Amino acid sequence: MFIVTRRATVLVPSGTVERPDLKHLYILLNDPSGKDKLVLMVSISTVHPEKYHDPTCILEPGDHSFIRSKSYVMYSMARIESVKTLENGVAQNLLIPKEPMAAEVFTRICQGVLDSKRTPIELKRFFEPIWKKI
Image 1 (cartoon, helix red, strand yellow):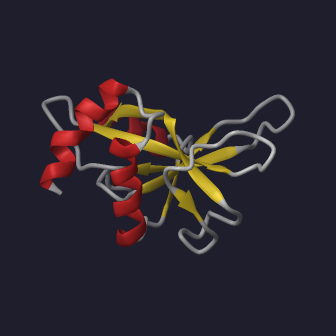
Image 2: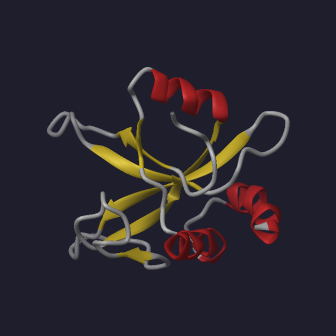
């Protein structure tokens, strides 16, 4: 059973025409918040040396079982989702739950939300008071 809580991870479809089965790992950064029960999610993407990547939080193989090569947190693609949307996605097998993110790695990812120049300001405003309580 999938429980929407901080440190939970899910694979989210992100396929293209060339790679329709592609999925990205997303990490849930907070317990459900507010009357709408919202959570902030960030995506992990592979570092490609020839392309720009946000250097704020680099992840290595072993930081999570899904991470097989040097990766980074794509703060520019962070998003807020409702518990209902996430639970429905899992129930419909659109989202695939994975094991929780390790606490030390999770802490680095969360701090990066506030440190990254790529995090949208409205998401920083949503997350900052939550992070202060964690």
